[in-house]
Length: 207
Image 1 (spheres, rainbow, N blue to C red):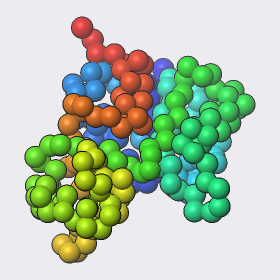
Image 2 (image 1 turned 45 degrees about the vertical axis):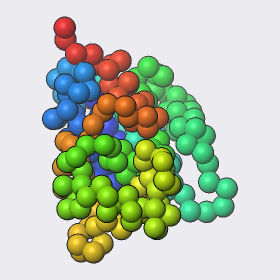
Image 3 (image 1 turned 60 degrees about the vertical axis):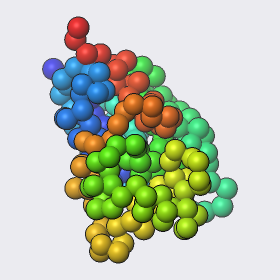
């Protein structure tokens, strides 16, 4: 008998975030309890992008559904592919290797995972040992957060800038705390919406 879901991710922070969402935020996601596993590709984002179809091939008989999640900004060379082009390429590779389109979903986070953690919860600055006033001020001064925008345009750099004076790394444990705190209300991040919508489509809450 197959388990429900395997999620392939690129790093420990994404793994911690997804595991926390699936374990502790099912009500907010509006999904039923599921049997799942979150695995990391040893080659991080480039490995997920280039080899998801190979990595998941041996697991086809073990899971009903597959979610593939990675950051858009993993490629540092010339002419990086857009999030849409990356999703399309991974999907094409999956289908070329026998996966049915209804059994997997590729989700590229633009620009990276940190975009998911910047919500409007009062708990977020508490977890980051700061305040919204200081965080926004830092974001504006460092040109990481445009005034009037709901989220920083450089979410990873802002998180690192907030944590740097505290000598705290951007660790998986922080992402676990943020995943519990982040509000799903009014979240306009396309990748997060796609992630949530996919889970609700596949595993709707029992009424």
